[in-house]
Amino acid sequence: DARVTQTPRHKVTEMGQEVTMRCQPILGHNTVFWYRQTMMQGLELLAYFRNRAPLDDSGMPKDRFSAEMPDATLATLKIQPSEPRDSAVYFCASGPGTFQPQHFGDGTRLSIL
Amino acid sequence: SQQGEEDPQALSIQEGENATMNCSYKTSINNLQWYRQNSGRGLVHLILIRSNEREKHSGRLRVTLDTSKKSSSLLITASRAADTASYFCAQYSSASKIIFGSGTRLSIRP
Image (tube, chains in turn green, red):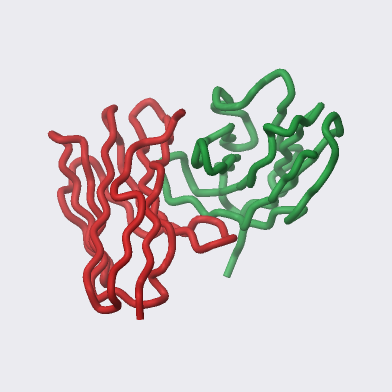
């Protein structure tokens, strides 16, 4: 079965450090999503891309977060500088279109000390 | 918060019983989808219902949609231990916005 792959699965780092999370979407999916999940806020859409172009990043704090798709097989989410409030599980998902079912990776569990 | 509303927040039932979860939304939708999340894993898509549909079935799952009340429900019949998970609805709005609900934690007692 094709899967969305996220790396790393876990990341612990100190406040102020740069964090990069990577995602390999399912081959053939043209839409890639980044979400953040916390107990308090639930699952929030941060940004999504179609055909590697950003369509909506209104959910993302622009001052420290950035999302890119350097090529069709790689999506990245960066936080610089990181803060303790960024601690969460970050999910990447891909799908064949904006309104179509999404396939989720198993997430990156991020802890900022 | 961008979360949609779901109720109940938590539900514990006996194996074999039916489980019903509800979701409400505020804007017009293109479709509404239900997902399941097992502990420590990503979400898994269960079922999609379009705005012009009223009911959809998939195996032991039944989803209804009432656009006049802006609500949807997910019914799991003849529950099993493996159904223990969190369930989320996701609103896909006509403005290309995607909003997930706050989730229902379902526990199935043996």
